[in-house]
Image (cartoon, helix red, strand yellow):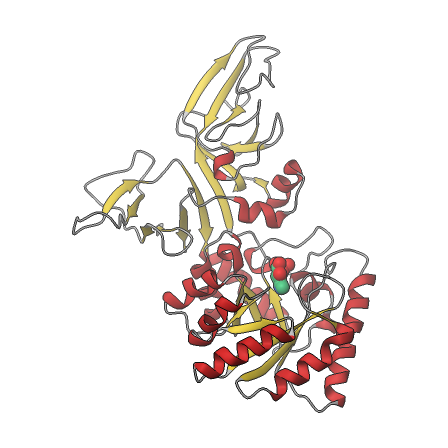
Amino acid sequence: MRTVEISPPAKRYYSVVPAPTSTSSPTGSETATIWREESSAAEPERLPLRNAWVEINLAQLRRNFRLIQADKPAALKLMSVVKDDGYGHGILEVARMAVEQGATHVAVSTLHEAMILRDAGFKSPILLLGERHDSELPWCAAHDLTVCLNDATTAEALARAAARASKRVPVHVKVDTGMARYGVRWDAALPLIEFIAREKSLLLEGVMSHFSQSDEQDKGYARLQHGRFLEVLEGMAAAGIAVRHRHICNSGGFLDLPQAHHDMVRIGILPLGVFPSQVCRRIEGIRPVMTVKTRVSGIRTLHTDECVGYGMHYRAADKRRIAVLPVGYGDGYPRLRNKGQALIAGRRAPVVGGNAMDATMVDITDIPEAGLWSEAVLMGRQGHEEITARDVAQWKGTVSYEVLVGWRSRLPRVYLDE
Ligand SMILES: Cc1ncc(COP(=O)(O)O)c(C=O)c1O
C-alpha cells in the first residue's frame, strides 16, 4: 500500500495525510491535510492534492545512506548537509533519516534552518555553516548549536555570549584554503585556533575547510587546497592543540579523494541520489530520491501555423496534439522555450513554446495513450525513461544542485516509504 505523507519545508501548513474515506481527491486517493492556523475548526481542513507535486522516496533515501555507510571506512563520521530545506527534499525528513542511518552531525546555513530542527525536537549536533552576525550568537549558545567561526571578532563575541549563557559552545574553525569565501586564510589560521583553544566558554571541536573543485577530473586544485589544510593541521600538532573533528570533503571529496577524508565528511547531494558531477560517480545503487510529477490538465489541437503560449515561440508545422501541464516557472520549472521534455505514458513529450508561471505545454501527438489527468514526470523516472536533475540543469544552463533546490514550496512534498 502506498503511504502518503505531505510536508512542506518545515513548519508550514501540511501534515500527515491518511486519505479520508468520505472525500476523494479528483487526482487519486491522496489528499493533503492543510493546517490552517487561522481556522477555528477543531479538525484540520482537508484540501485535495494539487495536480503538481514533488515525491520524496524515503526508502531510497534510506538505501542511499546505507550504501554510503557500507562504502566508507567504519570510523569515518558523516555530517549530513541539510541546508536549503534539505536541498528541497525537506529539512526534517532528510535530517531525521541521516541521523537514523548513522550521521553524527547535520549542517545548515542559517539560524532559521537550525531553529526549525531544534523546534521539531531534533537533538543531534547542528553545525551552522557560513557567517554569523553578532545578533545570532546568543541563539547559538541558548540552543546548543555548533558554530563555524571564521574570524577573531566573532570568536570573541561568541565567547562573551556563551559566558553570559553559562554555556560552552562547540566551535569548528573554518579555514579558507583557496575557495576565498568563508574562513580564515590557511596561512593565518593558527593564531585564531590558539585563541579559541584558550577560551573557556568555547570548545574547539573541529577544524574544517571546503573544496572548490573536488568533483572535476583534474584534482590539481583540490590537492593544493588539501595541502594547505594539512599545513594547518601540522601547525596545530606542533602547538599541541588537539581537535576531535577535521573535515574538508563534500560529496565529491568523499567519492574521489579518500586521502582527504580525515575524521569526517560533509555530504549533501550524494544521499539524495544525485552525483556531484558526471565524472564523479561511484557507488552502485545510489538513485535519485526526488521525482517531480504533474497531471495533464488540458488537451488542445493545434492546426498548421497556429501558435502556443506566450510570445509565439512555437508555430505548428502540421496538426499537433498538445497537453497542458499545470506547472510553470512559478513552481521552479525553468523558463524554457521549445526545450525540455516531460514523460507521459513512459515516453518523451517535448515542451513547445515558452512556459508560463503556472503552465507548460508539451507535444503529445506521438503519445496517443496520453489523456486528461495522465500522470507526467518532469524530473524522475517513468517506465524505462528518466529525466535526471542533470538533464533539467543542462536545459537551464545550470548545475543539478540549483535544480533540486529550485522546486518551490508551492509544490507539495509527498513522502513515500515503500
Ligand atoms: C561548506 C559546505 N560543506 C559541504 C557541502 C556539501 O556539498 P555536497 O552537496 O557537494 O556534498 C556544502 C554544499 O554546498 C557546503 O557549502
